[in-house]
Image (cartoon, rainbow, N blue to C red; front, top):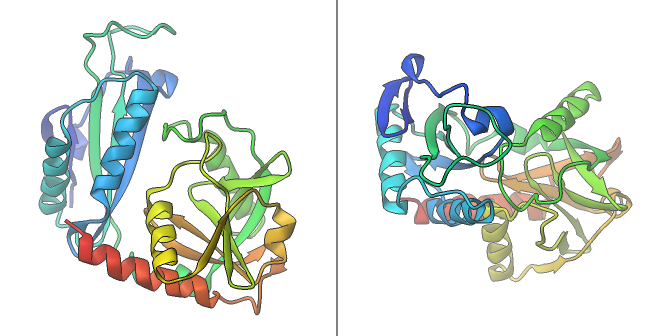
Length: 286
């Protein structure tokens, strides 16, 4: 089935969608994005993604392409048109095109480019990968310093996933100045003696929407949380570990750099948090 996508005010078959070759998202990675999960045909944590999108746009002095209400309507219509029960809605905003290439930003009256499309992911909630747990390797973090802005500059994270694949693992955690920053497309956590440890928010990591929700739910479940810097050695000595992201929710980690955590299976806190997150998020989905 040919997907219907959204490009600058039009709903089109994906085969007919076009963006200028002079678009700054294509030439300069001058664009931001969000990914919202869909479960039961409803959007998970749309409000959080909309708020973070505006923050990213503001940080880059990029114009908003439309209102939050219009974005919600576009999301809902694409989910309906493409018959998505479980899956994802990808949204991207670039600074647009003024018809040529230049390092200098185009004039302020240049319209941003807005693109959205869906991905059908049956079984997203009941993921076999979450039941097995992920194997992680550690790599050096050499990305730019503003990781809190959700830009499309994803070359190094993509390379990191390929490094993990070549090593027979599932993903990579990045290390800077001796401490774990985050995963290639997720926030990172470990659990020791019942305490959940994760890096505090700063410009060094993405301010994860799922991270925020999971930490709130952990505290509501009376689980202790510490937001602090931590090393990969601490993580390897942990009882269990996990990651959070909008597309994988809470993903247990069972191995880091070849070292098995606990008994090598998903830990109880990660499994509990995944269950809580999915249950609560479905109640609040729109």
